[in-house]
Length: 164
Image 1 (cartoon, one colour):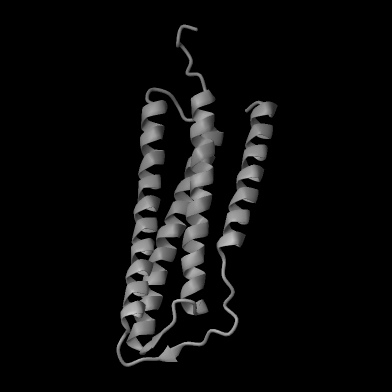
Image 2 (cartoon, one colour):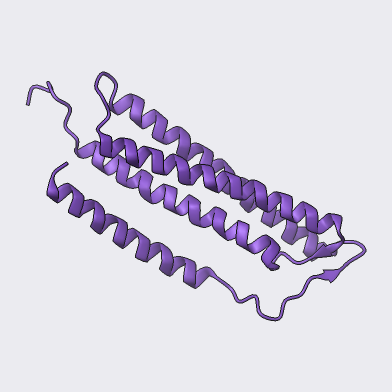
């Protein structure tokens, strides 16, 4: 891999990471002062919040699955009759790993909310739920950053025997 390619990747990861952390910082909320409160039945607003929460979890799960498929499709289309460069294999594996971790965190989030409801307390801002939910988002964001780098590098990789 050329030195300029490595520098371009380092700059890309650095800029993407800083942007991602800035967005994450702006979107985060404080959890100080929130304690789970027991309930008998969910109120209308709590039920709506739960629906929105599960909708977001489901969308992130779907997008992480699509990311896994996108990497695989790009590998098979771009590197059809030739070997995949080692750096690209690393990028693809990292993207798959982060997408898989996002799926795992989504499942963990679902299990934690189910646990919370089974024991009759409701607070979607409790650390029991927020940590796996945030990890799901963070790992999905990392998967997208690595996937974008994978695609950019693949588009700059000129296949041999193209006649140019």
